Amino acid sequence: MSAVLLSGKELARTIKQKAHQEARDLEADGFHPSLAVVVATDDGSTHWYVRSIERAAEGTGISCRIVDLGPDATAQILVSVLQDLSEDSSIHGIILQTPLPPGVAADKLVGHITPEKDVDGANPSSLGRLAVGLPSFAPATARAVIEILDHFDIPLAGRNVVVIGRSAVVGKPLSLLLLERDAAVTVCHSRSGPLERYTRSADVVVVAAGRTGLLNGTHLSSGAVVIDVGTNVLPDGSLVGDVDEDSVRGVAAALTPVPGGVGSVTTSLLLLHTTEAARERSRALVRGSAG
Amino acid sequence: MSAVLLSGKELARTIKQKAHQEARDLEADGFHPSLAVVVATDDGSTHWYVRSIERAAEGTGISCRIVDLGPDATAQILVSVLQDLSEDSSIHGIILQTPLPPGVAADKLVGHITPEKDVDGANPSSLGRLAVGLPSFAPATARAVIEILDHFDIPLAGRNVVVIGRSAVVGKPLSLLLLERDAAVTVCHSRSGPLERYTRSADVVVVAAGRTGLLNGTHLSSGAVVIDVGTNVLPDGSLVGDVDEDSVRGVAAALTPVPGGVGSVTTSLLLLHTTEAARERSRALVRGSAG
Image 1 (cartoon, rainbow over the protein chains, first blue to last red):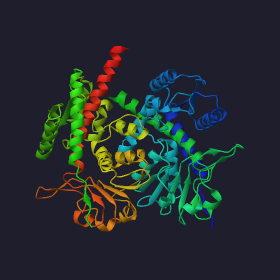
Image 2 (cartoon, one colour):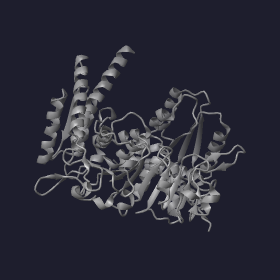
Image 3 (cartoon, rainbow over the protein chains, first blue to last red):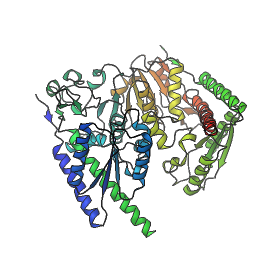
Image 4 (cartoon, rainbow over the protein chains, first blue to last red):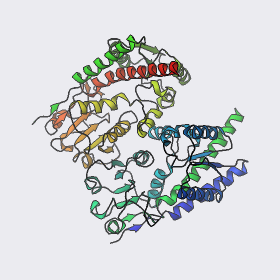
């Protein structure tokens, strides 16, 4: 037995096409969707990633403004830039890219991204709104997990879903999205004891811990679906997830690959969120001028 | 075998004493802590409950202003009152009491309680801040569960804790508090399938579903600790929880009674939160005058 590989590529293409169509529709209404990415590092792989967002945005009809503040940017400068972008009517989506300069904490900054433009769901208010069911953007990675499960018709209602990892960017928002889909949701983490106590009875396991080889076949029951959110860079530069792929493939029914799984869907969702934010803004303007 | 009853009364007294001491200390600094409760209903039991908060506050050295807007208050009036109270420097804590008039949704209003005064953690921003570990008030009921577990030295780190109920006022914030305490947390609910699939392996079960008799002894393993957050009023006017007490007492190691369990701790935490909010405000004033 070998697990089916759940590639995110076709889904990523579909979402990008949807974003592109929405961008064209907005353009026809005289409205040009636009994304700003704030960067404050000289880390090469971050710049490579940001350029990949820029290329994807421009291929989708979305302008992308990279605001590069350099590796010495202070928290004060970052706050002021995020506030300006929040007020700038030509910008519809804002991403604050990590890593930030040493000593600058993202959680002190993301509250300055206005929730309407918070396309990566970084502002705690966005998470709170998600929790109470108000309109808000979920972090793109968390939504990507749900979109992949839906794309492959994996049911969630009434299922036992185990999330490994309790971060504010994946584990916690994902658990909220899964609850909204009527799953029973267990969140475990590095201090919750033996993983298999929870994962052995899971229908779906989502691993988002950032630890190479954390989940292996002995943790699972036969037939589980495994979503690997990990992105770990090995010394040789290659990218691997949190799953010990060889052993999991022998037990699980299905598994997302890394790369080519969740990550490939995430960027396309950032673009879709940007068109959704622009659409919301254009509606608000119509309502404003009608009122 | 019969479960130990975990009464909340002694703990409630201790917390009230702590709030009282803090109120006296604030008073000595010329600072008078004050709580506002906004009411918009003619429901008798709600008025009875609000008066019980008022009595408890005044017995603890905290002023309590009941803002009774009557059962016909509009959303617009409520928003304006919550905004005024948020700006009123003589008020340190704000509670919006439910039920609200028909057609007025609490979730559209609570965003107008400034997080600094949101002593019952009702604003989605407070929940978001809780999720990312920023200072904020948890809903008093959710915190009451943690305080009771701590009071009786029931360990949480590495334990399997099952929360039944996914509300924004109990289930979701409680699951965040439990994760912060290093528990593995499972949230199940009315649509997640058979309860016993999760509760049978739980070390601690918290039931907050609002359904009389929902949890019984057959759902549990011997030795589980059960926290009953339910408050259901029977036709004869008596108050019962979500637990079938007779059958659970034969299986569980410990159980909170209703009344006299979680509920008795909740009000005292509202008072403690109010003194904490007043203390924070007094510190900010000192910082302001020093700077």
